[in-house]
Length: 145
Image (cartoon, rainbow, N blue to C red; front, side):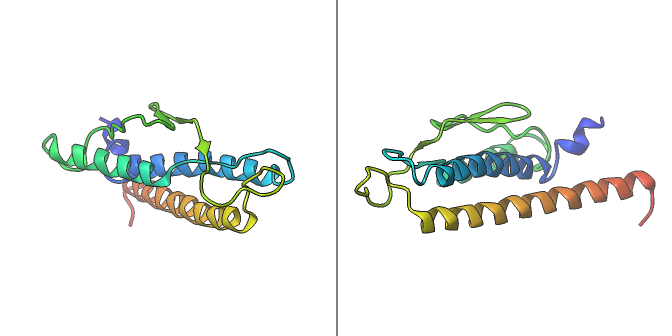
């Protein structure tokens, strides 16, 4: 009964977004930490594949069952992402964009900082949405408006 509170609406999809952006943040900061490392090749997580997988999972949940927003959100594993009930495991791939520099690295400071800023905004937006969902649940439990 109580699990339905967390298996419905946007909570599961936003939770997956926060898990993904948290993992991507680690990958991007690792790239930043290795800017000066010779022969280091930047790594990246495929945001398009994650977004497509999340969209497919939401569409599958809408098509099955009586209610379009109830039930577990089952995401399919990809080459880079393995989804578990409470976490996501990542295997970042090499970032093929950009040019290879004289020290055999492909780390682009400006592009990486842009990705980090975009990722941080998505992560913070997801956290804010989760906070609002939990605040609504808290109000409903208290019975106050």
